[in-house]
Length: 465
Image 1 (cartoon, helix red, strand yellow):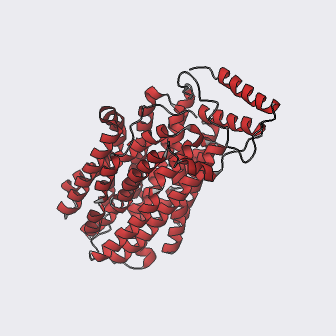
Image 2: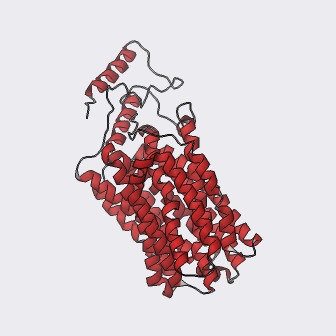
Image 3: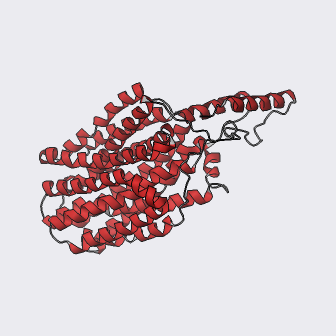
């Protein structure tokens, strides 16, 4: 790795000469700024953690992803029994409509948390903010067990979403910054399996605790809070973040001003980043909307197919979906190495559409064909997320990376909130048919495939500024 000392010397000489000539930066001048230290090197500078530290980063982010998956999916798997109790009715249209309200609040919380905590991580540190987000979503998942109305449940799920949204984006950025280019795809691919394991864990908890009542699953959701102890003891900040922090301190010491939140968000739409930002927003929105307005209805749909509480059937279906997700994480890096980001994304969206429509329109009973469809849907619908976790950190420089990830990846959560509300309304339009509503929303997969054609291909290197 090239030494940074000569670059620091040039920065110091520049700032000293400005000071001696009286040419100090004022509040109205452009920031000379955080990018200067790592620019102008003859070869790319790749900063990453060494030895055990990078493995601690992988373990911490993987466990964080497992618990993200667990706490985010608990509501989906208990949606029908939970809302039947809270609303005092088992009418499919009523339960579906109020379920869509809560999913929408969860999505809005996810988007807001991703943006707020993403910005915080660019200033206060990835590991520090990561710990706070995990505590937030774990404790608020526990509070869901105390809900006595759908409004209470909606509030708690909003806060759970805020924590999960922050953790997921920060975790992906932190991991990308800790691992070198040659092995980064495998590390991110390993992390991508975590959501599948988390959903798998939820299905297992439902088999174990579902018979005692839906509230016990939310009680189990408090477990992730204990992960923060490990993070605070073992996880170090990435070297890229520490270098940017030093740049900011040096810049302020010499009379400069820091970047405002508005300035950073504006930068995402400058000439350099505008096309990247819009492409990621379009693709991420399609992936997120379809996940939460199509895939999330599978457990409730199974309740409808069986006409029963269907604890075992819902759990087995979720197991198969989660196995598909795990395989998409394991194989995602290999598929991307063969096809590239763009072709992988197009293929994933087209296959997701085929599998989702095939599942909802060709099965009318719970059985082997349905389980095969669910396995396929889990693999292909999760693959766009694997691509995005690998791709987004490579599109933006370290100084704004966490903010950029939080914004571009999660702005689609607002669209997902509308999608959830729309799917709830469609359930009513289709006389309570979850299958017809989900099939209609699945058409957004085609929009995602078209949007994927706008995605830029990257070199596999992280921008260092």
